[in-house]
Image (cartoon, rainbow, N blue to C red; front, side):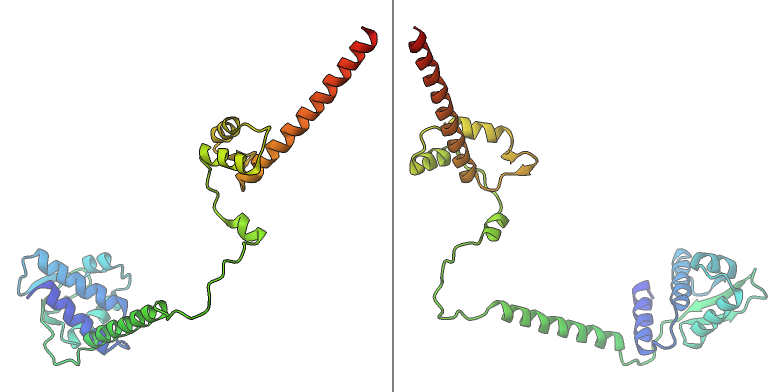
Length: 228
């Protein structure tokens, strides 16, 4: 006799008789198995009522006695000697439930595994869809889709190539790249969305500043010539 055989028989019975089983039945039976195990698998042993009730959380003695009687009636526990009151022990023995069951638990497990296998096949079939003959089209991304793409910081070479491609004349690649690299490519509190647009902004601002400085310098030169 071992704990696994006893628990297997118990759950076979539970699946055969779901209308009979309550949580208290499992709690009391498995505590009896545990107690017998700690006593070295004695053939007959005392099962103290108060100790069992405390261990499994049953507050009512009548509930406990009713649960124990059910286990005796179903053949899982043999009553050797009844206790005189709730403060003494019942002398019991564990009996392996050897009645020929329909093995409802085995059937339930087999049914579950079969359903799981079917669902797995269906999921694989849904993944392996045949390719259609429709031509693939590279549609341009909308502004919303563009914003939704994860930002990837450019390398210094990327920045230099963009400057050459756009023929920018007033933005310095190293200055731009070092500035945003030091900020982890954040603009204020937000992650940069498009570094190419940011680079174009630098070009526009630098051109505007150069134009403003040139006008200011020209004005000073004219005044100097006027009063020179």
